Image (cartoon, rainbow, N blue to C red):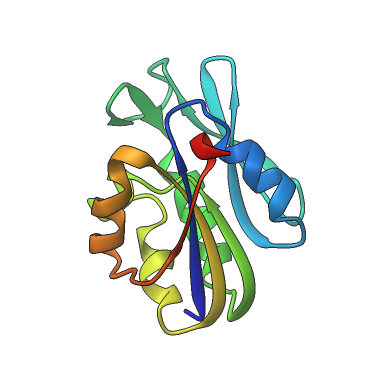
Length: 145
């Protein structure tokens, strides 16, 4: 990884909005909250897939959310094709620290020519940095803007 920028803040403080504004042209994925669900949006194509719901419509559950592992598998497959350039991931947290979610791509990015921007809730910042050996990241705390 060439560089890493971590956009941090609390729940609902605008991390995704910041990424939408500042990461135009990047490859990767954004988590779009709509109603009682999250959709994973491909940053390049705009394709969206239902990722999480508070309703038990998927077999996998993390915290209060039921999630579709197939969507994470699709996202990681697409991310692992990226060899260089700007990449955005929204959002990285406890699921990734435990090896799920975007963890496969995050591990692979260490060996690639990538400028990575990730959104991480403030309370998970140190856990994510430790889990993925992220050092010297630029931290953008949107609550201080």
